[in-house]
Image (cartoon, rainbow, N blue to C red; front, side, top):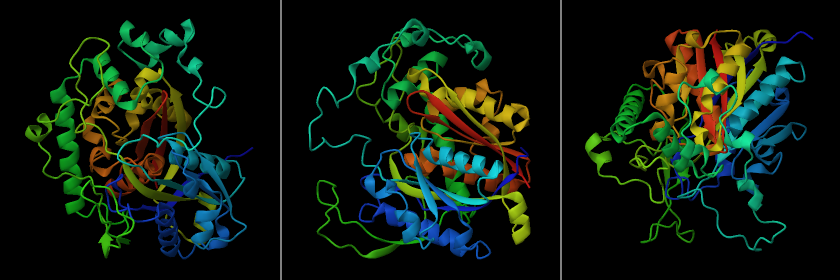
Length: 433
């Protein structure tokens, strides 16, 4: 079977709002996804709605309004016959959705598809108590915390990806932990200091502020008219109050004034421990926020794009996923990137731009070092510490951002990668056209 080239024709996203207290609180986020799809199609008039054969929706939290098949594409005006699917690979959901569509195009299953990521998050990732309490047959399985020697010990090929052994206290810790705790584990494994993490965070916000000032995101982030939410004294949205309609066109979590002094005033996230008896260095400041938003990428077979007279942004050439210990999930991009590079037929050192999801500063710093790459080419226009991380929408955002940067800078290979809860990573390599 002859494989076909896959190109990114276009892509856009909404601005990302604070989860639970931001500009989207009075707005249905399925309608945010609808608006992103509408604007994506309207700015690509050569791509007729009937050409879009499949729409994949990436979503992590499983909200019914975002995962009911076919509803968002239909409300956006696509034909009823357009198929739709839902993917949940936690933080990597919309990148996984995009990879699934790209693979379908490569093998000739379809010519054109749209990868959409949509997420609504609250102030935290905590879920409300279920209406029907779980039983011993439906609640979390206590055996999920068990592990055998194969699962406990370092992987047989650990030294292929990592230069540092995993400390025994981390190997002996529970296999599934909350995300900030896994970031602390990575910091312990690599001996990262609070100063390193906070300094990385400051640089990220400064780069993002400059990118917005320079108009870098004008072709990526759409402008939307939304209802300004009215909040109570306890800072909860009051659905009985109707707010005015306002323009929302910039990521809400950007802190242009971010400084070492300001970050230094923040204490560690409550409840975290160091299994290695070190200082707890993970704070809300050097961690990504929780967000709501949507992102979309229009994919097409390169031969079809040429036939339509389109000018694609980039070509998708490498796909990869990789696994690590759940306690160190932030390191998942390392094996995932190596696999994507192998699929692309290139060396990791040929990558010239990286969009690395900044779930935590603690996982970006060691991961790029393990790959032999540099912060100088990583998130050159800011990252998720300021942009935000609406879980299911982030993957498509990363691919779109690095593709546009490759086009803008004239570089050849770009990498989009992110860690995934439970101990995974996902990576996509794009090539400039």
